[in-house]
Length: 212
Length: 182
Image (cartoon, rainbow over all chains, first blue to last red; front, top):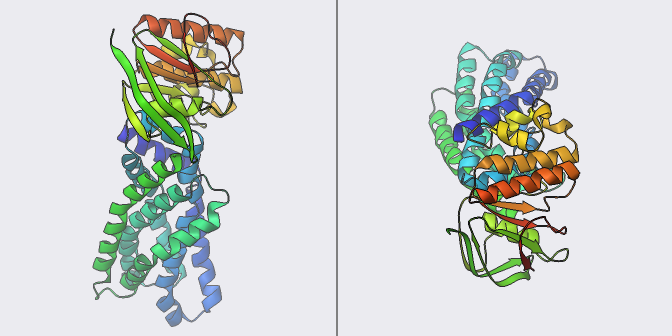
């Protein structure tokens, strides 16, 4: 069942609008040089941070379709009746969402890094930091989607919930992109681990709470 | 006969209101219970309680695996009907499709089905689940005469095989049913 659920999430992600967050991410990377100006030095200094803000906001886009359609169609109820725990559903959703979101974002990060003037070494650092950070973003997205499922016009509320929770990830992720010498990547990994581990439980509790 | 469901002194509170109080109910193999009551009397909540989706504030519930058909189909809208059904069934869903007269729709995406066809598909999901206890919430809604006859046949066959059915409906179903008024 868990394998079926993950496959289902990936299918729905890719069939739905997997390109939307990626296109948004690339778009933000494109407008950063216009806003900051053509100074390569300055651009490469702020570029890493800008990419992280872009990744964070891109993660907000698919939130409305992650959990709420399944609640409205009764899929979450039927899974519970079939004996699949809500935490397992949450875990499958996080993994499935990451598979449809993470690799594409990493691919898009290559041209995006060039656009914001990162050099080769910084590009590699950026990819490593995003590879560590995107599972945590996926976990946060699914958890926030579960918390806001059933409410109307969840977009803004989801942003208000997700952004503060993503701040530690943003700080360490952007630092790891800027500076390869520091231990920012390890700290980012620690935060990401905590977020990924907590996600299924928050999702499960939120799904159960929405039912009663 | 084996007991498929046993409620003892069950109380359920919804939205701060005591909806069900001190309910005892035992359902054995082959039995069928028709739950009646006015709108808002807790028929759907009782079925959701038995399905394990709601928790009683008092009392105990022992039950065999159940399958619930309410007005939510739980079928993926973008998939063809047969594949959407297969997600919920370990075995082939072909028999359930035939039973509810849906074979010609097997490769049509779920989102294109009409209300009545979707109701048939929801019932087919329950029939294909293999669960001994069927919980049907207003199962005759949106069904035409052929659909009603097929559902009644499916219920009769299910009871024949040792299954049990609990249905909440305003219509009196055909056959011998035990009444449970809420």
